[in-house]
Image 1 (cartoon, one colour):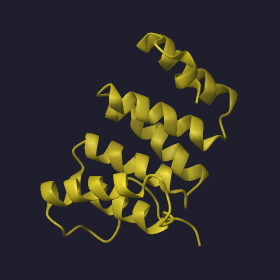
Image 2 (cartoon, helix red, strand yellow):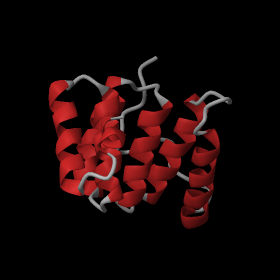
Image 3 (cartoon, helix red, strand yellow):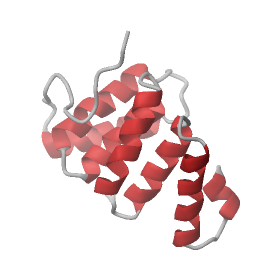
Image 4 (spheres, helix red, strand yellow):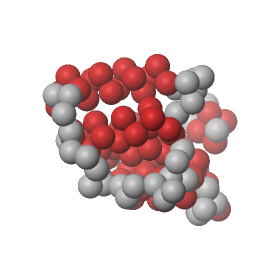
Length: 130
């Protein structure tokens, strides 16, 4: 995406580009998700949370949006929420999803950190509409 096009651009340039993408496409889940993941990679989980929530609001049944919010929850130390959300991401993912193995590894990590039990619903995100 946009960050890939920037190649070796500075972190500030990448962040500015991601923010511009969100501003130009406020209803684009991918732009919000990409910015959230970028912020998370910089240790800014709290700042990433509204972006991840917005991405999930835009496409509630998208495995990538759910997975991004799970990663943000993990980054915030919300272990049980991360566990619930990662399970949800795997549940909505296609078995052929290129990210399925990656999500299963993250789930195993959350289970190791949190135990395998978790509350029935995550407090960081609403359940998807049916």
